[in-house]
Length: 605
Image (cartoon, helix red, strand yellow):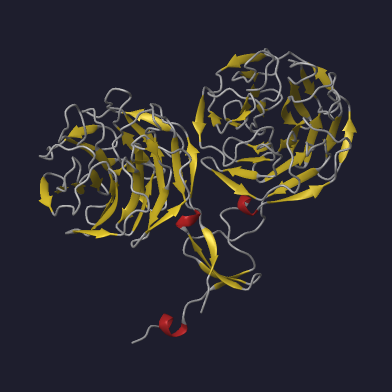
């Protein structure tokens, strides 16, 4: 008998616009009234509806002293700075602000305090500089980085203001100038975003916790002299210079950057401020000459949140839509570097793209180190019992296995991880290196190949049992999936792919690029990724990424850094991390692959 749904179908929601991930994702820039004085290299303080800008210049003239106040719609000239200058740090609100450092004919350490009416000279900064990052309030603020007078010019210095004096505190990890800060941040929570070193753009983003700086996920576009608003957890960056002036806007949600709507006018050396990523003000800047443009950023006031698998009708575009995660739209983005650079890491780590571990390798001696990834930072945790290189790993971040590899000599050792420590378990019975491994946890795992050999075994949580062999013996390849649904991908150096269904291995379509020591992730034999690796000769590293849909491999967006022998993890075919490895020498670079949810038109034929 037919069900009611089969007879009547299912209801499709009608929406006037596409679904979006958040209010910020639907945000837009709108033009507002111009500044009274066009200028670039200016600075500001405040929020979108009540702000202040000061200083700046019109090339090639000297710095300005002009101050202007914004009431949410127009600008009014106020009392000037005591020292005309440009490229300073701005801290605080429109009634209580600081103008710290800057450039006159050289970097200066001037510091002035604004009381809503006039500027007063107060205690100077310890180190003269310009184009700093800044955060905080008039009585509790930070400035960091910047350009100093002596080579190499870019600085890592940070100073903290307590309302009466400046004190040097912990430096940035990466010295730079032309960076953005978090205007609404505090002395215990701030961001240092992008910038440059001697004209070379850097990709680093760092988060301050009140005592130290930690590298976090990098922005999508490297640039300097950009504007910013918000805090350490909700931040917006906009404009800047990528080699040319930019209108690009990106939103930080506390763990990742997402591109949102661009400014109407591309420019750098602008003033940017605001209390959050939901509202911001961009004013002045350089488009090739100084401009007076002002734009307001406002997040969407109402929206329908995107949901994976959702089907709806967009009445505005007269189209049926479905929300999907098309793997072809996935990209690699740099994440925080690992703590210890190493090569010949166990060919797969364990866990997901946001919650995983990797272990072993060469640094240059055989390593026992284990590092944990929490989605934003790497932390060293308890070591392996046996140092391993060129082994294999699988499982979850709190239930993993490491097996085989070269401990000098090649070993059949196996260890399990419980989220805290490693424990030796029964040996496999066959020593091998460069093997593949698959399993969702450390209680149901298959190992295969390596050596090279075609042998395969299964671990049931207490013992090893022989299972059907691979069709093609090989080594230095990733295995992905579970103990009942897995792939053996490529090898040294082959494109051969085999699929495991729980009882037998079947050869399926080859990789497009034959390679060894690549990284892999996946749910099993229907969804996987293969990335990086080497071709003959082994010194030739690859950055190609391929996606497996259960039938064939398709080339998609490349890794940012070509390399092999890294630690990889990911329990799906649309999310992974790839950590460390070798580019010719050991690297600490780490990258994360993500696929954004997207609304796709359904074509009915």
